[in-house]
Image (tube, rainbow over all chains, first blue to last red; front, side):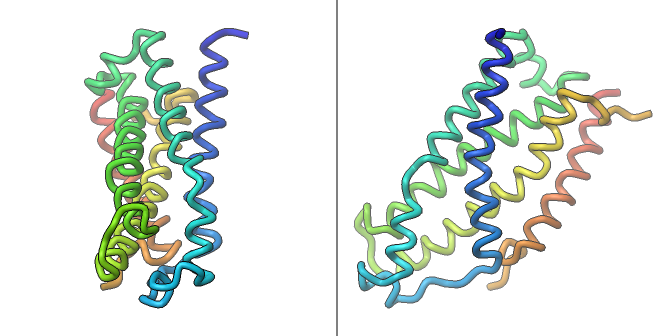
Length: 165
Length: 31
């Protein structure tokens, strides 16, 4: 088994674990339902406990593994400069790489800091925690939305089909 | 305030629209 295949396998599994969490969220809670003050003011409320139980960090670290495996694959093939500059035939995987990078940044720089406040892991007033819950919803759905073109460009990179004509 | 992300359909439609726009950009870059 080659290192490239191992990296691709890792990329798939970590990617499925990562966006699988997003898709699961859409299936289980397709429509936005705002948190109530009572959901957060009582640590034992069913919704707060459900939020806490979902916060295991697996998808956050899966995002790092999926992204890293992707970057290492590009680097090992000598494709990284072409992907970064969206050069000719490497434009599709370059766009995929930028989408994936944006999604990982969204997880770590937007979703996680706000989620820490929602869950009370970082001190914040109740109103601020409710505001952050709205932001985590939008952040999560942004990644769900971005995963749609991301998967298209991953598939196109391996199998073609984007080029005109 | 309502947002397209507030429903599964809105999220998927936005994803499809962005995909179409990015495919058009990719085709330009590949020519």
